[in-house]
Image (cartoon, rainbow, N blue to C red; front, side):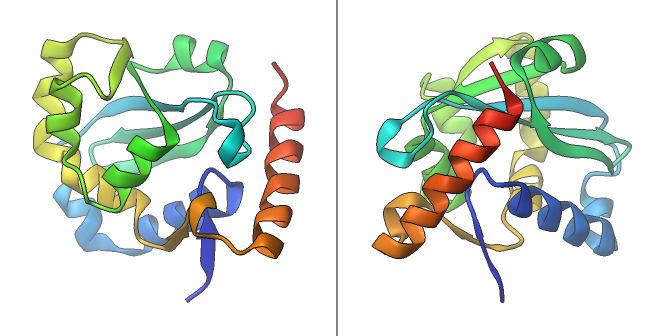
Length: 164
């Protein structure tokens, strides 16, 4: 299985491809229509020099978009924008922490949308996370020095292309 690195286009592209090719996954979200963005807060130790935002948009379980957004795009298009540190997202994506618990405890901040309406979506939280964890996902703190150097260059290029 190919390893995909956290917050890279390959991760989102492959996750979307797998989701669309797996009917059972779609069936689990067939009642979900929402537009959610996730902010990964900057962390120089992980070579994330500026916040990174990616989105997952669903219409009746069909994945319409899984891509990076600018902050302006997120606030214009999304219903929800949640923010957390890369380490928090890692724990959630690795299923070492519970999304709902971290959300209620404030480890994940809601920047757009209301907590009440967001809590209505908790029924889908595990299935949404499954969408993002269908690949062998690697985080910076798990990389060798050589791989980390390549990752750093990818992140610099991605952030330069996305602009401020």
